[in-house]
Length: 290
Length: 233
Image 1 (cartoon, chains in turn orange, red):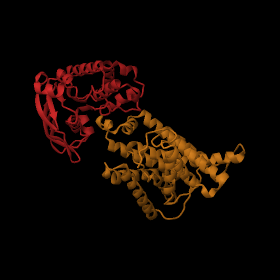
Image 2: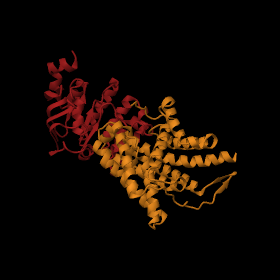
Image 3: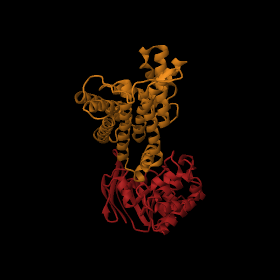
Image 4: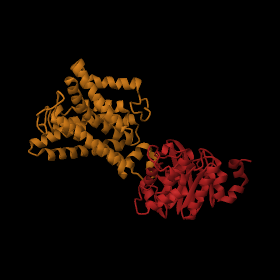
C-alpha cells in the first residue's frame, strides 16, 4: 500500500508538469490550430536560465522571474519571426516550422548555456514529509501547487477578462472574431507568450526533481503532446487530466513493470488514442487526418 | 457614407468581383441582390477587410479604408453580421454580445445590450445559454445583435433571412427597418430579393462579380428583367 501511495505521489508530480506543457499546447492550438513542438523548449529555458542566473548570484525568485520573462520573449519572437510571416500556410507547414524552431532553440541553448546537466536546490529543503506510510518531497508540493495556481489563474483569465474571452472567441470562430474587431494576430501572440510563461514556470519548479539540459525539451514536448491528445486536443480540462494520467501511467509502468520502458508509455498512449479514441477523453473538435 | 470604386477581388485565380462600384448614403437601406455565387458575400467581406482586395478603392466617410486591418474598420464604424450565423458557439449569448462591443467598451455598452434585448427579446431569455444551442433563427438574431453592439454607423447584413421560416424573415426585416429609423445605415445582401428590395431605398443587382443594374428598391422590384431573373413569375 505504501508503495502504491509512493507511486501515486511521484506520478502526480511528473503528471502535473506534463499537464502544464499540455496546457501550453492547448492555448496555442485553440488560437491557431498550430501544435507548437517548441513547447518543451520553454520548459528548458525556464530551468536553464534560472540555474545560470542563480549561479551568477541572483536569488531564486528574481532568477525565476527573469527566466520566465526570457521565455516569454522567446515565445513572442517565435510567433513574430517564424509563425506570423507564414500566416495562411497550412497547419502542417506551421507545425514543421515549430519543429525547426525547436531545433534552433536547442542549438542556441548550447551556446548561451552549455551541454551539461544542471539541477537546482529544492525550494524548501529535501526533508521528506511522511504521509500514510509513503513520503512526499516538499518540491512535489511546489510542483502541484504551482500547477493548481496556474490552472486557476488561466481559468480566471479565460472566463473573466475581455482578452481571455477574445481568445476563446478566436478559438471558436476566427472569421467572426475578426468581424467583431478582435486583432487575431495579437491574440495569437498572446497565446504564444502565455504558453511560454506556463512552460517556463513548469521548468523552474520541475528542475530540482527532473534536472535540466539544453535538449530536455523534446521529451517534455512529446509527453505533453501525448497528454493533450489523451485529454482531447484543444480542451484545457482534458489537458490537465491527460497530463496527470500520463504521469501516473508512466510511474506505475516504471514501478510495477520496468523502468526501462518508462518513456515508452507516453508513445503507447499516443498510438492508443490515435487508434481507438481520436477525439481524446474529453471530445473536443474532430481531428483532421493529415 | 460609403463609396466603392472599381473594387476587384479574387480567390486564387478565380475572380469573384470585377470592378464593382456602388454607393451607400447615410441613412439609407441599400439592398444587394443577385443569384448564388454572384459575389455578394465576397463584396461584404472585402468591405470588412477579411477578404483581400485586388484593386479599386473603398472610401468610408471620405477616407480610404481598403488598406486598413479588419479590426480598425470596426473602430471606424463598420460592423458586419456574416452569412451563416457565425456565432461563438461555446460562449454564452451574453458573452457573444459583449464581444460584439470588443472595440467599444464604453459606458454606452449596457444601454446597447438592453437595446438588443428589446429588439430580440428571446435573446434576453437565453442570455446564459451557449450560442450553439440556439435555433437557427435565434442564432441569426444573435449575429445581428452582436454586430449592433459595436454601435456601427454602417451595418453590413449578409443573408439575414437565409434558412429562416417566413414569420422570422418578417421579424428580422422589421428589425432592419427599425435600425434605419435609429439612424444606422444598412447594406443588405439577400437572395430573397423581393423581401430585400421591398424595404430598401435603393438596390444593386450583382451578376458574376459585376453590377448589372441599379435603381430604387421599388423600380427594381417592378423591373421585368429583375422579376424574371430573381423574383420568379
